Length: 266
Image (cartoon, rainbow, N blue to C red; front, side):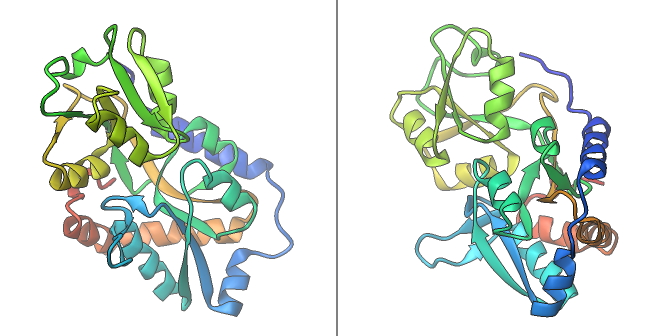
């Protein structure tokens, strides 16, 4: 299975076009945040290494939790974390349930039509997780074969990618990441598709799992922060934040802390 690398410049062009078409709001979210000293940040609390809530302690950790707190410091605002997901992302932002989504949002054409994206700060390929006892799947090329069942979580970019790429394998779309993992562990699916951050933390905590990596670049996706369309002042402030955390080393420091240095975007 092979696929051309996702063209970051093309997608960012779509983002800019979408922003130009959107009407400017009566007042910027930035003004409200500065007045109320609260910034609402949407996260997906099941994203290992990115925005993860420990089920025992309920503590949040991950590179985007660190970056959200840095954003709060710069704005002089308290950070209120709002639970979201990839399936609810667009609705949560457009309905103004949060000011920004900070959980490594993959820039895709469909999302770029409805959301505003910052410059990318992370870039990841996709990977597969199988059980160690699965003898049918030993390499990436084994995945797209008759009789193979590939599990993905609904609303993720992996759903879109695998719909386009699979020719012979069966695609199983499940409502939650946990459900896809259960299907693989129980033997009802052969692999589930994920990204670098999730795969690394998942392997560390599940000794039954093995990583199936593509032999080369398969589908590189830029990750960014997302906001609702039409708020130029807020978008410009987030762009400046991303530029600053790259330049002053805060992003790289957090990436090293969470073992994500290989996917930091230049």
